[in-house]
Image (cartoon, rainbow over all chains, first blue to last red):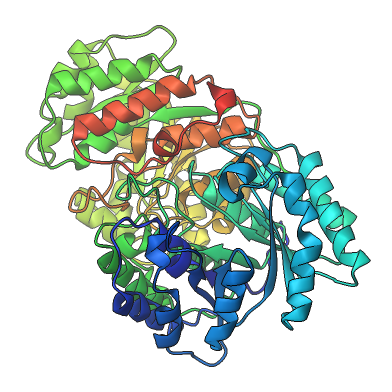
Length: 314
Length: 314
């Protein structure tokens, strides 16, 4: 009936993308406590923080402290975000993180200008500089991140042809410098994707770049997120970003079910219910979701932590 | 890629199933105001109330008043729930509702005993009495409702073979009395279904009863609801129950994202985004979702009312 993968790898992004949306500063000790709890759930990858300017993201002012204090668990990949060379240097200097060379291209020109003060063309023109940095810093190039790949609140619909053309150009620039990306990560940054569009997009990229893995980063802004996850699984996609409790909702309506990532525990349950392995202990994950609620101090949107695990997972 | 229907019919169940979960009594005028707003959205069917004992469901004590006061819009089917002959008589006496003959069989024996004080076998044994009532009252028999068809919090997993056997027996009893059901409505009463299970179940019923329409009533208790909706659409299912704003959450944690139906506006958007007609004005539906929040006095779980409609639907 479909090409569901046998095993899915969820990358937890809550401590980075979830926390950064919170208006009240979360104490470093509490951040670390949640990361350490997540490490015990069987998750294979956790984004622990973001090395960005505290001027822009005050919540991430303690990036170094967080990275210093969490406990590494063997077998877990601990990632961090950085958006420029200064951030990369800070992340590397920490010495405890799994640094991967990532490109971030925002397909929406309007959002690119607002978010990174660069046009799409300027971002593409900057790729060689990034690749040089990575080479100079001995950072393996891992990922071509394609943001707003399904639509944008500022630019509106993003045609598939534009996404394909950007992917093509990014891969070509890499190739010209002897760089092969491990994966393309498509981000539905503002929750525009629908399941059929997602399938068409993934199929079109695979048709053109059959050797390239496609990973996904989805948002549930408009309620289509779990349907998109299922569509992704049907396409055999086995790497998904999720956020514990569904953290990452709109900072101005955090108690409402606004703009978050998909709740890690709900996605993990969906996978396990369909016989897809996640390697995750669902009970521990739900405990972590409850801890996340305590940590942010308001209800989160995750469902199974309230609805209860079906008994066979206990 | 799939058998998506061209057109989907959503039945709004919020004024019945949503309100009944609310602990605070909602004023009759406010109930009527929401029903009237829903009538203007393009929805084709609305469950307006439930003729049950106010002893058990105090929120429905004003069933007659609600039914008397809402404004019928031509073309909209206005349904009501009743669980015994007394309820059927009350609903009929009102004279304003679209009365349909419905059977409700709870496949889970444990939940059947708790909810209706009858074993599964007793419920099945009672079907001829129901069919007689409907004939005597000139009510056309429409629906074989199969509840807890995917799992039960009290009984655990519900094997597909048990569902198939119950469906078989219900249809046989009808046949023996010259009754053909218009549809089978499978209810995932406690949010146990996963998309693959849903597809297997629908396929198995269709294989055995190819002429029988299958409609669905899903819950989002464990976060799999929207994935199940997409699975249902992929199976060509074109009648779904939904609840404005996702009303119907757990009464003890109503602000949390607990046990509700799927939000009508999110499901409608999912359909429209994939090119499936709903006949619904999404902007008006979102206004109704906001009104529903006002009416119940706490945030609801619906997403697009917070995330915002993509501009092409405005």
